[in-house]
Image (cartoon, rainbow, N blue to C red; front, side, top):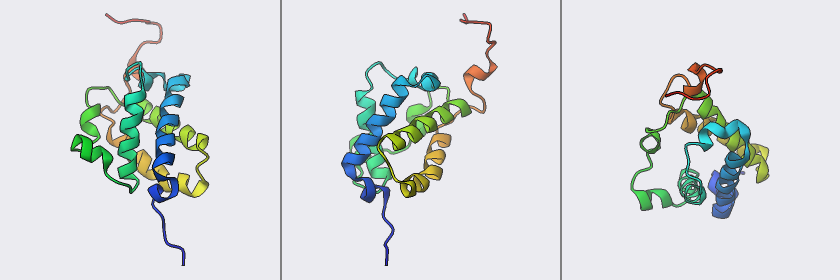
Length: 142
């Protein structure tokens, strides 16, 4: 009898760290993710570590993020950034590409699709993306 495995059991800690690294490398280079990249510092190393620690616990491994930061609430750290549907979708695009990059199997990708959407949508704090209301003919606002 096949017993269901958690994403942590499938990827292991190192695989999840590779996923987090790939996610931020893709965000850093993908033009379609420019809006969410702009929300981050130049050095993405600390964020790679935080995402890895969060995902390790979230995927069924040891609660590294919670042990270090106390809370696993994702809305609080993101509340100061304007996150609408476009930003959510940029995050999901980066995560989809990261899963491809680490050669995640189809079963794992399918297992994570809805939960990743729920996380990305939970940190959304706007019904519309900030850029969707901006006049495309204006390059700066004062």
